Length: 93
Image 1 (tube, rainbow, N blue to C red):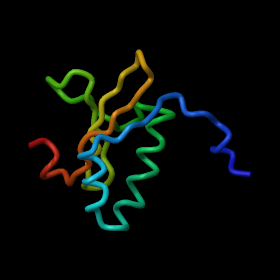
Image 2: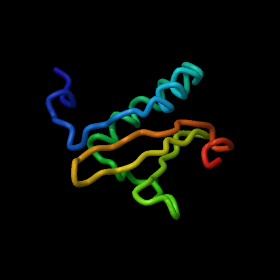
Image 3: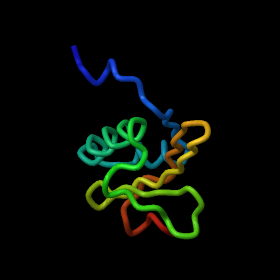
Image 4: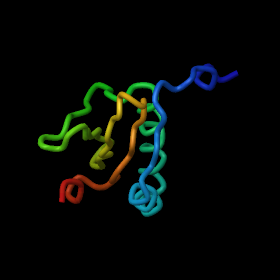
């Protein structure tokens, strides 16, 4: 039995269409590293190493190698919305 499957997620995680497109374009090895991080955001939307983006409301970013996952936290509705998932050179444009 997988212990993590019996623990409910605290937050629901949603992907914006742009995030879905970004994930489809990623190389397989990067994709395999990013998906567990996105899943974990449902349990802990503010993991160690995450940074709140300046002048961006409730937007945060978390690093996965040279890639960045940009996301928004809605504490009231207990939701995490994944926005762009891009290489760091393209993340903040």
